[in-house]
Image 1 (cartoon, rainbow, N blue to C red):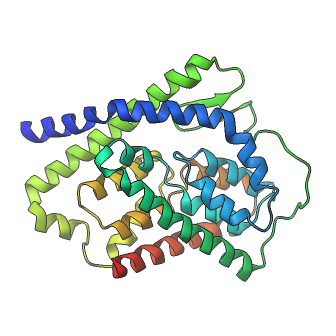
Image 2 (cartoon, rainbow, N blue to C red):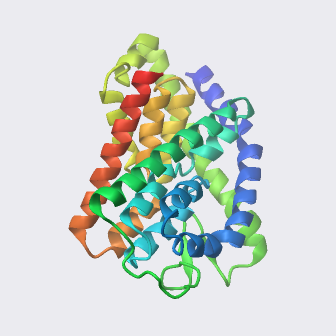
Length: 292
């Protein structure tokens, strides 16, 4: 037990400087670009799903929140919203980048997810004949909820927040929160391996069956950054395949899903979006498992 605990602590603390640096950089980027990105995607009808897939690659779930708000205002189509959700990986990208020897995974993950998201976005708009209702519409300001700030799990963005908090304190809090998830997951996996062995681990995660990507999708649909951290860590530990990881991370729209549930008044439409997100993610993961 002591060895498992020590290994989990070692793996977790080794990621601290990398994660902190990544989140500081992301915070700076988000403060500079959120309103610009929201404006661009809502004024590009023909290439909106592709732009949504690209912008959805930005780590964390900030842009999925923007996209959900824009969709509730009918500034973007359902296909564009799904493209954003499918390409969003929430906290998985920082977790991968925090292990430099695994950083190449980010390239392949994002490439595959952009292809899936773009294809699905255009297909949904074509099949459902979807388009944004208010086109053209007047330019809008930064997409934030009432109260002047946008909450992102453990912190918020807003005009009244001092820069030192936005660029250091919030990334530090975010880093510590994600590290706590990583430690808990690493410890749990270590205990599972010790108790079940490799063969038992494979059975536990339904290795080689369609139930593994299904399980990953079920976890991915949980609107919390812990879900994406769990999928990333379990993949890095060898518990699930690349296809299953893609399935779970594609299904995870992060806090954007909560914003959609709150802001979109058409409940049947919201249910359809969630079902499409789950089915597309599952199909993509199962196909990747067959091909790889």
